[in-house]
Length: 330
View 1 (spheres, one colour):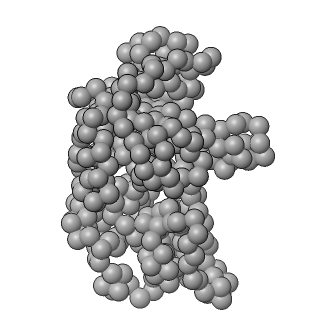
View 2: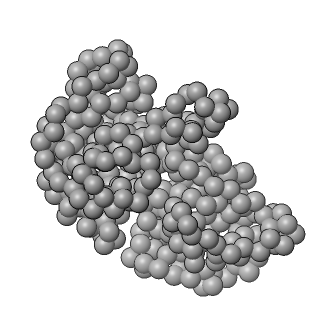
View 3: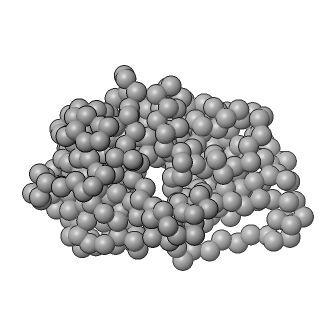
């Protein structure tokens, strides 16, 4: 089969590789659609420490079961949770598998879906609802990260939200906030074109700078979806007394941000993080199936497997929103 192979940091090619062979408890999936994510860029550039090389990237994907195995039959349409938890460490034992001491993920630590076929655990497969396209199914994984982020929030109906970033993840968080009963959702991004999409998807107010919003009392929930230190530091100042700041965007590992410890104490501000997927994948499938997410607006570009370099460059250039690879050429 053909696959994208990152040989070493900075070096990748699309070439023939052996077909995957399923181990006990695994099934082979014929990949139909796989999304490009910031983690894929970090893997290509050698900036994701858990990744061994060479590796086939790709962790946001959907496809069809290639050969019957267990309860799965050839042709079954599935989205796949890429999470690989050891099940034996302290964190797995307390139900926090996304913090697993031996954490792994399909496409991050073992070969993934930027290929015609991929081997995956049967338990990680989720049946796609009838009528949900494969392309939409490949959007389930990033949505499941956003669902986990909302699991971490102390939500209250009628809360006012401020989101930093109107990229793919920010737009998913925006749509979930609307579903979760937000009184209003304001979105900040330096890219005006992205703000236009945020408005289309339900943002009550958009701006290039939060100073443009006439809301001196702040917001009950402020979420950073950028990982940019300037946005994080600004967002921390916008939280209303008794509110919550969530770090959802991925900042560089060595980066630091300034906060006011007195304000955290005096205003009883909660600061929480959210990392990856935890018990949220199945609910993300259901939400996608109900139409809670405008997937057609979210997915803007498709490339063939041999066009991976072009797709990666488009991602780096900030072109569109979700960019997908279609290994089957669909």
